[in-house]
Amino acid sequence: MHETHAEKHLRVKPGTKIHIQDLDSTATPGVTGTKAELDAAVQTLHLELEALQGRLWAESKRSVLLVLQALDTGGKDGTIRRVFGGVNPQGVEVHGFRAPIGDELKHEFLWRIYKALPEFGEIGIFNRSHYEDVIATKVLSLINNKEQARRIEVIKEFESHLDTSGTKIVKVFLNISKDEQKRRLQARIDEPDKRWKFSSADLATRERWDQYLSVYSDVISRTSFEFAPWHVVPARHKWYRDWAVINLLVDTLKQMDPQFPKPEDNLDKVIIPD
Image (cartoon, rainbow, N blue to C red):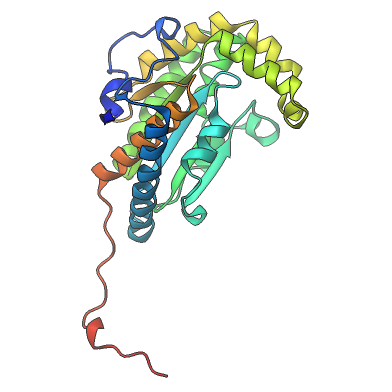
């Protein structure tokens, strides 16, 4: 099997306008070969991710933040389970963000985001993120164009600050088709063990499918920065989705190249007493 790094195939080049509606959610850019071969590659990447995470944790001077966005049934939960299944849970934190409630409504929209940022040494995962506050809010007419533009500028400053302060951001949009979403929603209804995942609110969101994709396309185009670019991952094939996301994380950590702290001197002379 031939494979190349996911970054160059999936990255949204800063300054370019994308239209997610025109992207093939069944594509597998960057690889040729069978599902079994790619599954084997993922196992190797898991070992790399585990080793790199261990170094990041030991160094404890920087962190990684994975931002996952998708429409309903896009596969955010499954991606997290699959990609981080073999990683030391001590160094991983997952936070989910839906509509703000309670004290969250009494603060600027990034307040709850700051509280959830990973500590140095950790990989943080946002299952939905601050981008809900410029996408869902716009689709639902909770903010106007002026407020959306203001928030996008705030996000740019926020992410730039994180980058210069030692937190590398990996932003991923998991792309599936409307037909695939229909199939996955129906599966939730048809399978008793999955019915708990279904909500009638999913249907209301589905009615706005085109509007959501239009706003996603606009926001991703405007917020794919050199220091924090977006990656649009075709997510119809879960085996490709998993390979792409873990590849992006491994590539990011390799570029960061975290190091173990220098050990004490003369440890080779230390003898542990009985």
